[in-house]
Every structure is written in structure tokens, then in C-alpha cells.
Image (cartoon, rainbow, N blue to C red; front, side):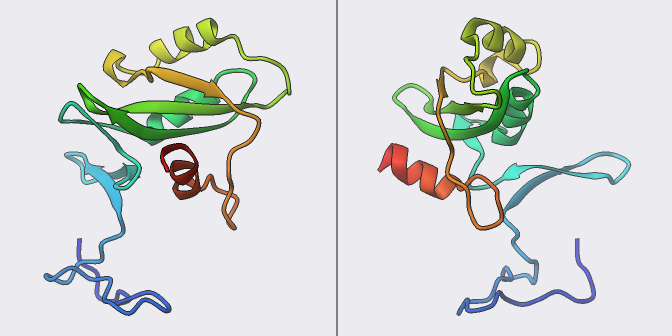
Length: 146
């Protein structure tokens, strides 16, 4: 989509934020339905690429946070010898209590395609947050993947 006015760059960024054909690359992955409605499905850097298919980290996180007792949820892709990447789901407890992983897995299985289900789920005390209060996946990747 083109608009009549768009910023050519970001503050303190030396290079142009525009593609060679004049589009602003936001880093978002989106779909457009037949009626023209746009839905942002994930960020390009956060999507999990597994076996040649894309898995939306955002949809897994949204499904996870609907489970009672889950506070924050973050998904990152971790290396997998067979599938290239698989989803690792990290969650915090909103109540300070435990989360029944069997019930939690059943909950996710009812909301997501089977091949999207994380192979590994970790309950953690906290997740790194950036200045805007969002989970900082860059820091998370550095902590877990080096």
C-alpha cells in the first residue's frame, strides 16, 4: 500500500527505511482478506520458521495468556535439527502459584494447529521488558541462545 506521505527514515538511523521501490518496511507480517482488511499476524523477526512453514509467535502467545494463571507469554524460535526451528514458549504465573502443564497443553491444543504446539514450555519467574513495557525478545534470545 502506498500513501502520499511517509517518513523516509528513523531518527539517528543513517540508511533509508524505504525499500528500493519506495515502500516503508515495517517488519510486520500481514494478511489481506478478499474484502481488503489487513491483519498483522506477527513481526518478521519473531515468526518461527519450522519445516518450511511459518508459525505465528503472536497467536501462540495470545492463546497462552487466555489460560487462567498465566501472566506474560513469549515465544521464540529455537534451533531444531529436523525442522530448522521450533517454538519455545515461556510463561510467567499471574498468581504466583503453579501452572498445571498438562491442563495448559490441553488448552493450547484446543486453540492452535497441532504442528504449532510448542515442543517445550518453560515457566519462568520473569521475562525481560523493554522501555515500552513489551517483552524484549532480543534480550530473551541473547539470554537463551547466546
